[in-house]
Image 1 (spheres, rainbow, N blue to C red):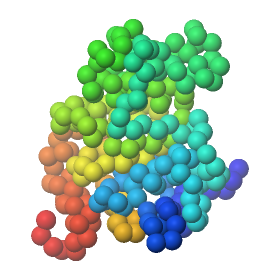
Image 2 (image 1 turned 45 degrees about the horizontal axis):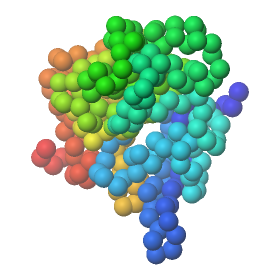
Image 3 (image 1 turned 120 degrees about the vertical axis):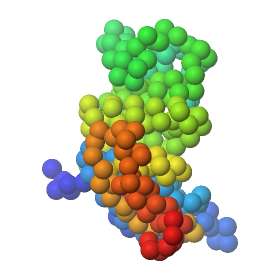
Image 4 (image 1 turned 90 degrees about the horizontal axis):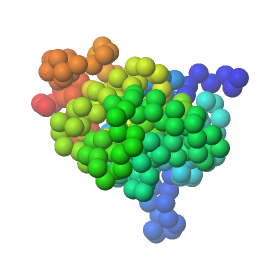
Length: 261
């Protein structure tokens, strides 16, 4: 036991790229705790360090100062406890959908029958149960992203790190995948850190919205989303949703909360 009640913690995290006159501070003194089973979305202007923060949790980027903890342990590199989903699907075109989902399990040494059974389970979970034998080229963009999500789930991470995973999709598909993500989360309650530029998306799926400010990247505001789960279309249209969305917009643009939306 580490005594740390948080799933993810940033402790005075700073990240500087480059040296001397070319140095750029992507993050400065970030302090943030994310609870086990919580969905947090991260928003802010370009250059505020959203993706840098996620890559630090993923172990893809080292901190320049401070420390990032997962389950109370310092992050020292990538690990199977953290699944990463990017905007680009990065599916292997020569593998079937099932084989793509099972790829990480194969690397772990799991036998073929077991990994295919697990892959099929997660394909069912994301609504692709009938497409295991299909190849990526036959899938729509939304289906490819669901395949990528199933692949991340298959290795059984306790943390999902999602960097604008729906950003390249049309509006209707994006809404459907937001609902799919929440439906999947309701079944296993994994911790989710979700990067987005879409304020409506940020509010709809999250327990809390983390707003970062740019130059240097730093914590601007944390906004609680006091809306019930499961989230529905009626919630999107509610005055409570609108009020929170407007609060996030004002925070992103550094406006006083009493200013007009």
